[in-house]
Image (cartoon, rainbow, N blue to C red; front, side, top):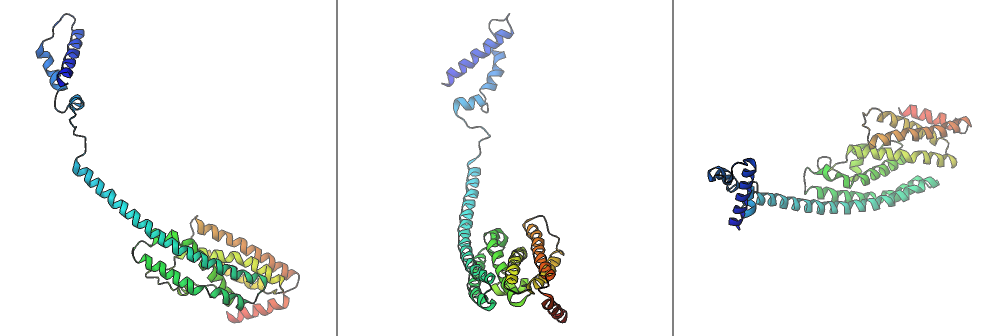
Length: 293
């Protein structure tokens, strides 16, 4: 096979030489020898194709083994990460289920049910939430320093939890649930597994969305001083948020929605005030506020 291939190349070279030199009929072997040396050298591509010899560009066996080892490690890491995410997601689903039950209990507050009765039912789920967040903290201890890598798998549920806890706290005390108080209610340790500040702030914004509906239903039930209390609370909360330099992200959008909650409560408050329904109650409430401050 090699001899036939070399004969073909020699013929082609002879023909090319003859076409370039029409006066010469038989080229000298001395002239053809350099061309043949190039074509049949060890590193010539034609020699590699004809004889099956590998070129210098082919990676060595050691390089391939190193590449294979690296991707084998990647495979194990991805499998471990996927298994960890499944465990986290399983706990997050339990948190979501618990928050749905809490929210359904708190909806009764809009039907003018007694506040202690509503809160007693909702508070019964706090111990369950503490256990579930303790499970999350235990899982994350297995991969220290990876909190924000997996944080997205439970942040939505955490924001809902903060919203419900903050609403319950406001119904009970009339004040804002602080970040440290929320961590304490959930049994979180900020040094190991804490409550992300952004999750807390978004949860507070979610809580403000429930206040306009609460005000309307309370006024309908005859509590004409409720709009004043909620308006004062939302005004202070909105002013506190204005201190933050928020980026154009989801938190900023939720904060922008708070001003619409504030506007709706203002409309109810002004309507009640113009109709003269809360004249005496408002004066009494303002005096109490001044005495407390």
